[in-house]
Image 1: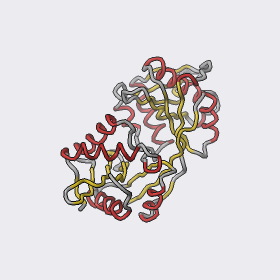
Image 2: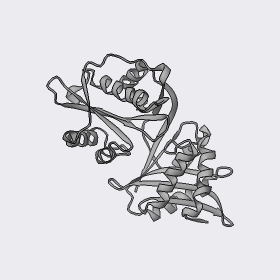
Image 3: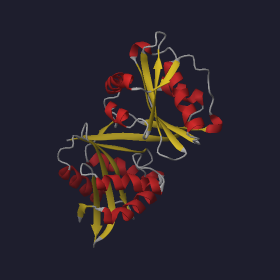
Image 4: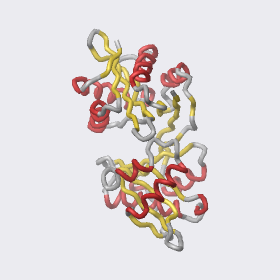
Length: 288
């Protein structure tokens, strides 16, 4: 039986997600790895009326779960799971998704993002006729591997005067991203730190975002440089500012970032800074 999960099911959902998400062959890139972070993420989903936690029950026992985090700005749902306590069951996974699709009837799109080793999700995506995006690399930079460079461009902390510039540039260059420009601005100095790079005339040229979830593992989440300002070292300056803050201000141990597999120019930049390949992920979406 498929039904919506409530707070009384949170601990069971966390146990299932923690067990399966720490196995590459069953992991989902939208789900955190640590139990505390998973608990926070799933508690938010269960408690938010725009989101949905779906469970598959066998004789009142929770056997599987699917979490849908819905962005209120674009009505896209990022899917955590499906996960099962025991063996994978594609029929049950399909039922949970169809329940979520019907319940979240105003959702425009469902996104799945998972480790390329996860063959079960491949089969589910085929059954759901999902559209495939480009593979993405998750790169990791450990503090001892960091290779800082001289920053020639001027990088400043975010201030409200850059708000419209950031929103316009982000939404123009990354319209399919899971966060919007407004999301970034609303989370400044909460879960995100934003840096702006200026050109020779002190005009806005681009921005970079560091996401901090309170752990020693931080995320270099977004980088964007205006098209006419690219190739001048502004991206490199932003990367160094973000990484320096992660290691020296927030005392982090590692920095993660995501880059398209086909974006060799950006990958070469990250590799030169000391980043290494951690995981290859695959992206699918279902428009409704």
